[in-house]
Image 1 (cartoon, rainbow, N blue to C red):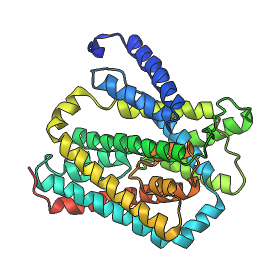
Image 2: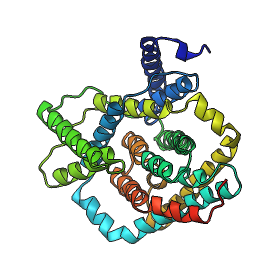
Image 3: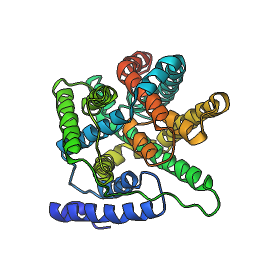
Length: 356
């Protein structure tokens, strides 16, 4: 393939948009969950690894995160919060086990000298990718390799989760039944739509200005959730707008896979992939526990324990018939725990790790 970096930016954007539409439609017609995240992400990876120079502006990615935060916050109800308070030992316990497993895998990568320094520890964190990259850089780790590990994990998790969701949805359909068709352009309340965007945008702006880790996603979740639960905000986000948001996030992830980063990480890629597969398998094992002992349906249990990010798993869950509130509670709990104890845990493990 011709090096895309030699093409004008306008041509690169045209290729990105056109290819994403085609791949997204193909995946959607194949009933792949989160096709509008997966398709643009695949196109972004292909273009990024072929030296494309275009990037999603930071404000575009932050805006997409704020919209997704509003979607997640609007999915929360008082009953969900009550459910969390009732089951918090289980939620915290499962989340902590996942953090310990990911830290152990990262430690193994470090002591085996698969990656330099403490990169493996920071890169193995199951969520809050952007925050972990920033923290890792402040701690002296190679931010490029940490970002590579984090986004390889995201790609693997999204791909596997989409495959599992697609298999479960199609295999559980009664004979002769078809997958429900999305209504992409439904009638919607323009006033509520505008107010939702205003609240999400304001919350995201405050989160960024206060330098809260992943604040553009985190603060809209909290603010919209509080307003929605109290009946002060009727969240309105039409499918077509969410589709654009998913594409923006997919491009942001995919275009981070540049030739220079691949060059630095190529020798370690097989072992990185192995560690990710082990982590996905560990989390799948926890989901079996939820199915057998708590009666949670298998797809809900798998997505609830899948080693995130919160944003990509929420997109997949929203496109399938699962217990979305339960998934969001589990994923949100891990997201908050990763932000709160992930960096201190990574630092603690790093102190007992030989530097190279």
